[in-house]
Image 1: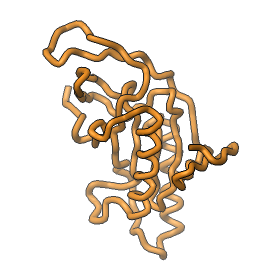
Image 2: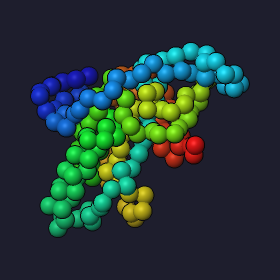
Image 3: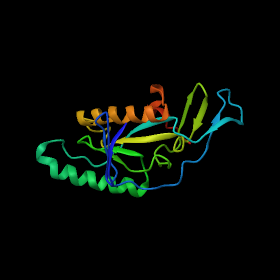
Image 4: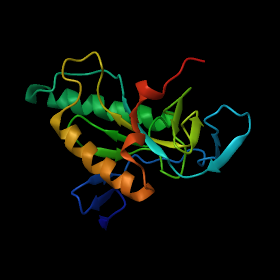
Length: 183
């Protein structure tokens, strides 16, 4: 549950702190179709609440995660936040220090999933920007150390909060590689 809230931060009972100083609005989350598993052309239902979470890495410029690079890490992180905000890329960003930033309001769509698809027992979801929340780790899959221990800890707390808030099952918490499709 939410313990404290200010103009720039939310604090939750599980220790999660969300920086809201970069939050921006995007287009409202649109009602999305849920398509039949058997491939019928007509949707079998619709939704307007998040059904899952897609995890990403930002694939951004990286500095060594070392004390001597702190200034560069902070500069790169700030530049990344500004870019993500401008592009409405993700709902949340977890920086390499484990700080969680809300970037796009949860009620809005973020531009994180592109051409994507996922299915569950209720049906098939296409182009997940409206049906899934986007959470990004500052990092690169080309780096030897892909994410930090602080990021893992923060991601656990954030994922726990979002799953509870929206009733999201663990199997609907997926990576971008699992949902991305080529048009």
